[in-house]
Image (cartoon, rainbow, N blue to C red; front, side, top):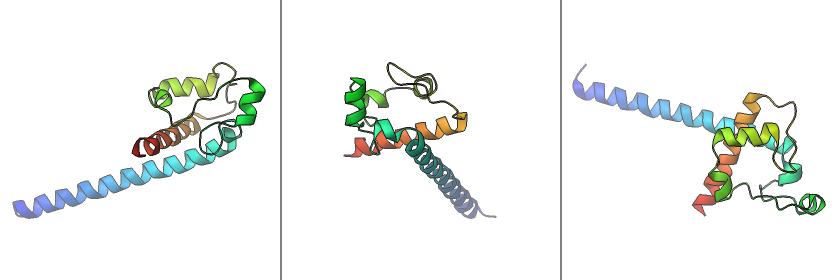
Length: 117
């Protein structure tokens, strides 16, 4: 195989691998949205901006989940907030580590969307 053909083959493999990785990331984000919709949306709203009724009832200001403040949190910090709670936010019970990771991926996608605007 010539150098030119090996280079083409290598580039094709890189493109395929990137497509596969991006597809997995997209699937993880979609699954994260499903978990978010079941477990988080009631308080944080579908768009992550916070449910005003819940905020008034709890007498808190819910952070917008696409905000710079939330984007700066590490995955470990987000995991701790989800699994242990923070302030008046109760811990999310009976959630697997995989579900937490997917919710975090979904939250990151909200932040990426906000950055593009």
